Image (cartoon, rainbow, N blue to C red; front, side, top):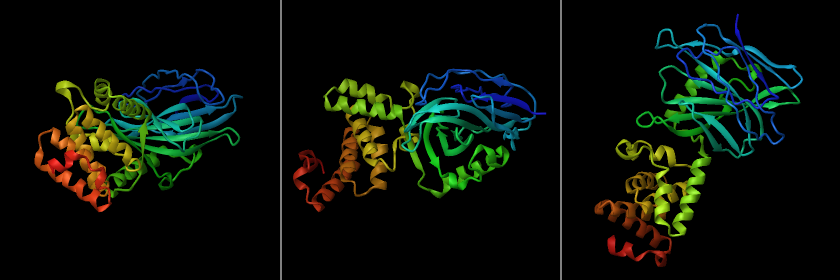
Length: 353
């Protein structure tokens, strides 16, 4: 017999499932605030009790009339971990109300992030979050949007969260994985055991193929960047330094080596101008090594982006590394000359190159 997890979709329920050694969810009836039409409301966390049963959960979801929308014992299996005896992998389940253009994601540490996602529609979602014993590197969030007319939960996004395994253990990035690669389109045809294996394969492909998956920026990153840029334009260097520090992992003696996170976290292939400007703000705020890491990568991936060479050269110069600085100044100078923009070359370039 399976245990029953009941979720009532006429309630706004962002269920927080404690990470336990067995990943077992006990029977719970969720209750919270009614979802407003625009899908916005405060979120209430409900605690679930751990159990030691090896049976899968039965996921039971009803609508506001009490009619059953989902009744399945295939969604929340307990999958025996291949490397650790008597430990199990599987999923946690949440009901979430999303805003238009934004999506929430939960990482391995249970931290929830709001990400900018233009394709996300406002509404009610069932979210399945993968958990794998011994895996400290990544997890998936599967987002199923509720269609009240069809009374179904349809897959809209598969998000891959990657965490920093070397320092802080914080989220590095979130990617949108092409759902066409998955063998299910809704919760009705979702088999948790088969899907778990496929998701692991997709993560490996993502790592090794270099496929250009869409990378999502967090609302916090966007807001902090805008505030830091305004501080720079206002000439408030103390405020700029404070705001730029929010992008730095660790603090004091526990600060992370920039080479272990800066590029993965702040290089956005489809928002190169944003990444370049952040590198510039790092340099202006005195975070020179962080600036070098980010700008060096940008010049590698986008060799025609002249301004990145200037920003990189300035960061090297501030670090006292004159040889790489002079090289970058020369590269900037040559690119500006080649495009007929010599009048815009700063005087410091001519004296330092």
